[in-house]
Structure formats: structure tokens, C-alpha cells
Length: 323
Image (cartoon, rainbow, N blue to C red; front, side, top):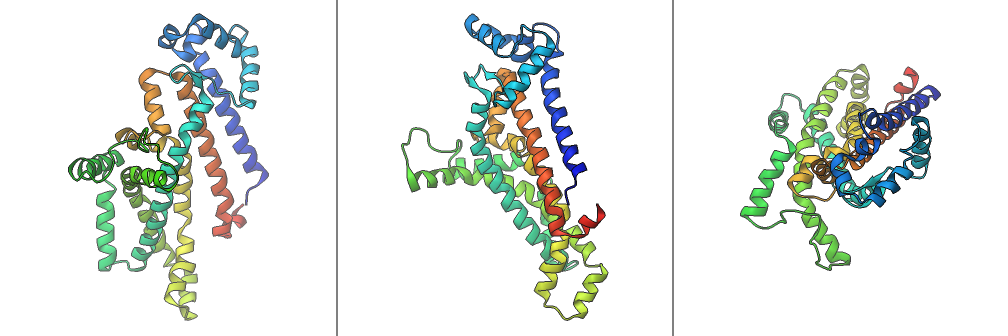
């Protein structure tokens, strides 16, 4: 159950993040415009654009005036201006967010669902051949980073077999529409999605398996067995459901980090999402974009944890009583 105290905690955390986002670049020595945009950006900017940005962010005013202008801009959805993309930061981020949400969202759903199912089956058969095989495979798989798996898949299916695209989210200038475009997007999605699912499958599996083993020892499981309930009901409705809290915590954290969690995969496959945009912004030192991405990532982490808090009591009512 979400209490008023919990809600205030999230709001205070959000205010602290937004305030730090304002003060950190302005604590750097030198001209505020240079601190926010970088000296490389100022070289490429025209004097007219520099004057416009100085006026927009009130950089010629006192720190208090800048702070008021900063909050006014936030309420209007103004996160700054990107000199690299020559567009407002919010528009740039929203344009890339759809691709990251597609890739990261599908990877999160598939890795979590398959990890929970395999973890329940493995924990239910603890000590058996199925459990031993799954555990060995998942432990081995957890040792490989996602970008390494992505490179292997890219070399095998993209370079050697030439059956799947090497980069991008869709064929540029293809002019495809409707079902044909969806099929093209799906083909480009296969390799990066597979790499992310494989890299994150082991985490969901191991958490579920360990929780399942602990739940199997609980007195209520012995009582449920004594009632003569069907094995499927015991496995999924009683043991499986009560093994999901650790997985929910991990999933909530990964939802929040999804904005930057796919960074390396997007770089490997040149996938035009938030991660690849962050890489470009780092390369060209586009500080406003980096600030915007960090701000969006922080807000996503808070929102994800807020949602998980709400879901805890629905999965396990005992959490409500703990409050």
C-alpha cells in the first residue's frame, strides 16, 4: 500500500534531482553558456543563436533569476537546445525514445516472462536434471555482457549468413509502408532484441529460482499439499506467485534504467534509440542532450519504483500489513 509518506519521499527525490540538474553545470567556472553547452558548441554557434540561448535561459541574470526561468522552462517542457541536432532537447529525446521503448520494452517483457517460467520450473525440480541443466546454462550465460553477445550474433547472422540486417531500425529511404514496413522493423529488431533478452534472462531466472526454493519450505506450501491441490496450482498459484517479489524489484529497476540500459547494444547495432543518441552526444559533447537524458532516466527510475510499490501489495498482501 502506498502511503502519504511514500508519495512525499518520491516528490522530494524528484525535486532534488531537478535542482541538481540546474546547479551542477552552473557550478563550473567560467561563462554559464560555456558550462552548459561547452566551448566546442560556442565555436559552432552563430552570435545570434548565442544571444537567443542566453536570453531563453536567463544566463545574463542572477542565479535566482536563472533558477526561476529554469523551473518555468521545465513546466513548459523546455529541457534546453541541442546544437548537434539543431533542435529542442525534448523533441530530440522523444523522437528517439520510441525506438528504445520498442527494443527495451520487448526485451524486458520477454526476459522477465521466460525467466520467471524457467525459474519456477527449475526451483520446483530442484536437484533434478532439468534444474541442473538450466542452472549451469544460465550461470554461464550471465557471464557474458550484452554487447559481446550482440557482436557474436552480428558476426554470425549478419556477416557470415547474411540473413539479418547489420544496423539501424529500418531500411533508410526504402519507402516501405504498412505491413512491409512493420516486417522490415521486425527484421532489424531480431538481433539486438535477442542479445538483450539473453543477457537479462539469467537474472530473472536466478532470482525466481532462489525465491522459489525458499517458498517451497514455507508452512503454507505444506498445508496446500495436504489439501491435495493439483501440482500446477501449487507450482504457479501458490509457490510461483509468492516468488515474484524479488523479480518485480529487479524489473522495476530495469524499467527505470531502460533509457540508458540499452546503450551498448544500440551502439553495436547503430540502433537509433536513446542509447545511441547518448553516445553521439558524448562524442560531440552536446551537454544539453546529456542533461536531458540523465533527467529522463532519473524520472523513469522514480516512476518505475513508484509503480512497483503499488504492485507489491497486489502480488503479496502481506506487504500491506508491513506498512
